[in-house]
Image (cartoon, rainbow, N blue to C red; front, side):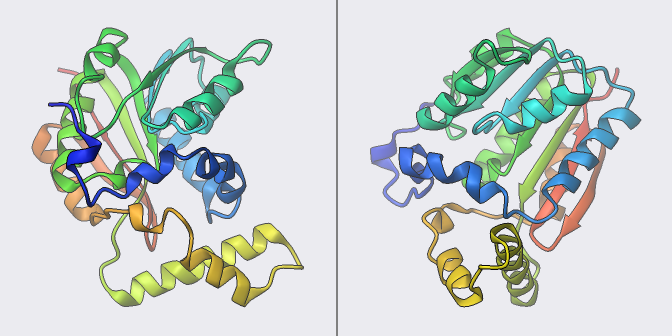
Length: 251
């Protein structure tokens, strides 16, 4: 069933379709704590799994940063990048347009709340790895679980799904600690001239703050196991920033 934006009055993630928000994405990414560690964990998981990634699926690809990072260490020949934001897809197309070096890239505009794009993704599979970075938390829990089920079907036997994700805190204590972590990260990215009060006010008033529909990492791990993924675990977690993964069984 195709999602109809007009029929979902409470939907807040459509902000990511705004060109102004997309244009700020690169700058805001610099303030995310442990961003390099997230990718390092992803690489370690792929290496430990013994996977050679030639065909890659990037869900919620944004400007294509995750695909670029995977291709730095893996011989990616083809990457399918999915995002529901045309401005974000434009940024990704710029990243992989000649003469830039990178895998052959296919771009799919797809809304995670719908399935009308699934056939195009399936036709380009199966995939040695599926990655996602800070994207799936924008959709309701039932849609998250359904998408994870689709991912399992798109993976080649033995293929790995790695999700770098914003997850729910166990209590307000941990949410407040996460907020402080994010504010400190933004201040570090801005340098010595950063004003703590201004950064905090800007962070709390950010345009995308209402777009999050967070689920605890333990719940999402349970979904993966129930769906049939193996080797399911959370490999990294710092408050609301997590890297978790699951693998399609080889047989």
